[in-house]
Length: 460
Ligand code: MN
Ligand code: MN
Image 1 (cartoon, rainbow, N blue to C red):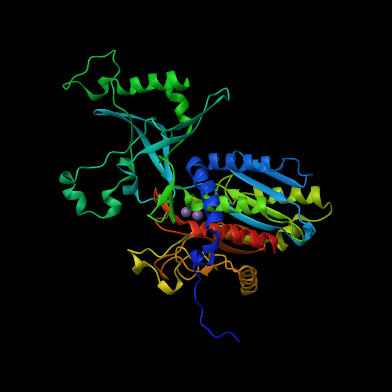
Image 2: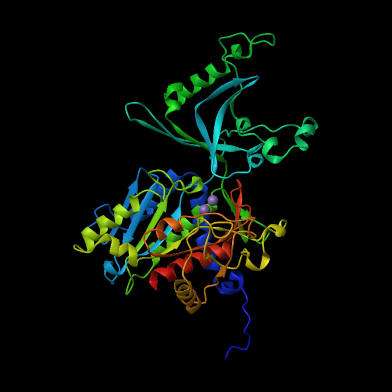
């Protein structure tokens, strides 16, 4: 019998104290990934490149297959030794993150500056995006289909962009307002330029538009990219925090960077898929979706039929005669998404006994949803217990948590879209501090533990 019958959440740092070298190597690869992949498109391109290098191809008759969708979502699978009819071992994550999208008519000339008007994407705290360097990523498509890839503000020496914030002396009224009133979406305008078009005289008494700031910017855009203002209407331009991810803290134990929700899980799932030993395993699969941050609707989101179509084609190629619905029903899935770590300065929003601790390994969320578990899928006790056993057998630290206090917190993931097929699914991912902010924090030990956990799931 165990001497200590109580449960204690194990520390990932203690568990991997002897594996500092391996943790460092993984962290190096991760920081490069999270610094380079700032959009869903860049993330999917990175994944596709690494899969292609590992022999994954688009012909579903192969042993290692992949299928991208519009450069924003991707399905990949590896054959196991068990037949497909027994179901997939699937890990699902999302490649999109909160950001500021350019409006269709973005350019506006204001006194002294030309700005881009934005429409925010996903759940942001608006004030976090003011007075900080922003980079611009995206694609501009000419009407003949020719594409221009945009990435400005990441390389040393490149200019960045910025939303100016109000001087404290002028923010007396704002200081007394509710947050939702003090920071308006229509004021999230990004400064793109300041110098006037030299062809016109400039002066105070003139109408503001007469400085020709917008004209000057359009000339610059045309010179650099060969585009006109109409090309911006159909473009996808995303403003994201500029700069590379980096270590946080003297001990370099935390990793700070944008878009770790949920790209840390995309990265961990990819690492696990590439390194898992598929001997005696089910066929392994990953699905990386877009649009999770805005409810998973849309062609590249989890609510679309893309994943189902992939499984149908996989069944036709790998196991003719096997019905895809059978495969889906028998599959076992991890909804790989991040959890909110117990915030050291806002502990009161959590119910501490059921909050995730940063540095204590990936966190299971048995259910998501809110206010009486509404809008949730919930994993069954049998599946959860089996997974716990799989991780315990390898001494992989894990924990279980809810998102905030009952009736105050809650949230959704892609789990319920997989549960709709009747498959067993549970959320499992690392806990982050400052989630959804421009600079999210993850624990290096949690990253390592999460890759170990996903690999154990695949090899079970
Ligand atoms: Mn997420
Ligand atoms: Mn999120």
